[in-house]
Image (cartoon, one colour):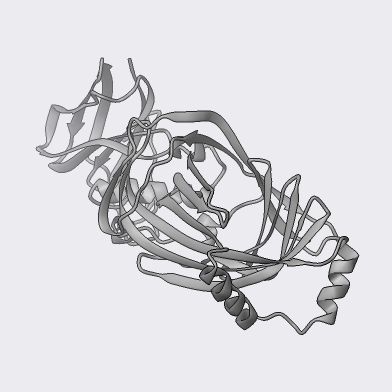
Length: 390
């Protein structure tokens, strides 16, 4: 019956729709960094997003884009002569950050730029999967740091990570993302200068000292904090369901010497959707159908009744999308307009009686010109069409 339509997609959703209506949960499959990804971020003016809890609204519309061509690359680092071998290396802002996924944990094992090299003997626990609202972890980390290959220090710190807020985020572009989970990291670090001038001397000195432990780090941090000689970092990362990387993040650092740096980065969802990422594409489609009020059909199984839709014509007049359709029986009908990445923008539901010339309209006023996807859901059957707003 429906073979004459060019754009027909039926979906088999092997998950519970209500899962997609709940708060975001981070998993290794959907949110661990992947080798080969190139992230096209935008630097924005810094904004304080303080305030935890559920059902928050973070309105970032209209904030200034400072640098629209900021990039991060995720590469594999495999150097058998390097103690940080077989880790994932993220290159961003002339800084290399080395991370290792071990079981359910994402660990930071070191950082490097043109002037400094930090190696953690005890890595920092950055995330422990799965992560849902209210989850928290804490870790002590320590290692060594070299500056300009002339100054060497023992470095140590404590990191506390909490999924402390959920809600809706209005992006700098004015788009709205729901099911957003904020990961809030508070980190303090301290350092003790070592009386050596070369790395071999540093290694020899460390080997001659009693083993450094998590308790040693806590004692040193307490002493440094009393003298106000610690650096304090406050990091907020906003994850939206269906996207691997944070769509927005802020970083504020207060240094022991009193200086302060602030940075904010926006990674548009539409840019992330260009990554070849089947797991997150599946999640985005799940959200789309959950918002549409049901799940897709079972792909032609014997228990699936035929679609009552016998004709479907979609036209666009300016910002108005009009669908004219025929039904062989009474049906629940939902029209959805989404971005090409699957983010729901507009929808309208109605019940239509069997007959010809039925109509459904969706007003897309406010959306930018360009190409979008229109989904027509009739009972459990879905067809899809490409539409262009002018």
